[in-house]
Image (cartoon, rainbow, N blue to C red; front, side, top):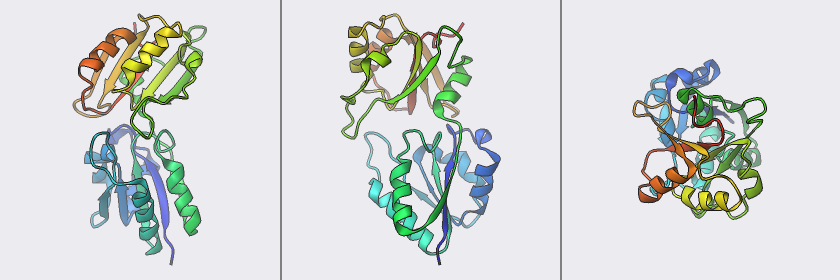
Length: 240
């Protein structure tokens, strides 16, 4: 008897941003394996009696290994359960989705992917800004600020990231943003380029801080903070 896994994107944490399909899968699930940022009010949509298992990863904290998470998914599904793998933001954006899919495929277990609101889009909406503008910001790019070691990835396309006509979103970049900014400025991006630090997006303690890339780099070098955050920089980050 084989169950089924639904990869459910929970959005940035505000339960009102869940899709109807996401809420329905939570209500039908026998087991929910959830990320740290998907906990709290979103789990109230899970049905009474469902197994709730925390498998979230947070920088600087003890976290389950990826192979352990994948193994749990397979083991629950093999009991015939309807399993929800609840991921923050959109499951397909820096969520290690593919590794978990590969484990299910190897075990012959069916799955589906339910998209959600990425943190970057929620941050822009909360700040009252678009992510694109005709003639001034015709490209949007998403990068991770940390590789598997926690350091700044060494293979970043700096020419693209220093494009003054692009909006760039940096995930997991609190600790590495100062180094990134040094490289951006060296590649010609003005130090005065607008930047937005969006912390705890969709949570009651949400915080939005507008700055410049140079000033934000100095702030994060002095105190990187601990809240989950995304950083947006580019021509639209200052708002109007």
